[in-house]
Image: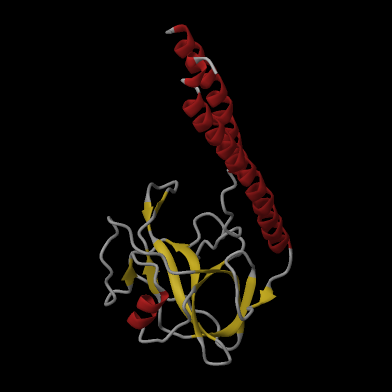
Length: 232
């Protein structure tokens, strides 16, 4: 082998391995694309279907129903989101109330955003009722989250155990995010969620990125090899 071509052996092997690694990453993203499309199809089907009774091992992508009775006089407010209105910005938060199931388990229900600065329980009718929505796991507070005030029922930590303890209750390890129609404009009623959570689906773009890197690598190696050979 001529000496000048020997100088390309090590870089060529490195480029060859890197090229197929990039191709493998692109193919992996295409496989994940198919997997994610299956999840999104299941979420869409759940949204257009009737809610299912709360299963033993629920997922956050199912629309479920929970039967129970509201525990009167208890409520909490999560967050401090400001909404716009014709009269200007309106402060408020997510109204959370406890629902006791027939088996005794208490589930916290996020009824939606309300224009309140302190939690005021809704006057729900007594007796057995049904809450529909999806389940949400606890969320760790961010660096700049406010300080929880259990005495006032104000929380910046989305933690059912902590919120439940502030109410003097032992609760399920998740919160039901209520789903339902939007109240009319100007209403003081909570604004429930309108859809199930949807995970992002960027795998096609990721696949194109990896394949693009592989293509760039080919041209870069051609220019590199040409320059090294011509420099001899």
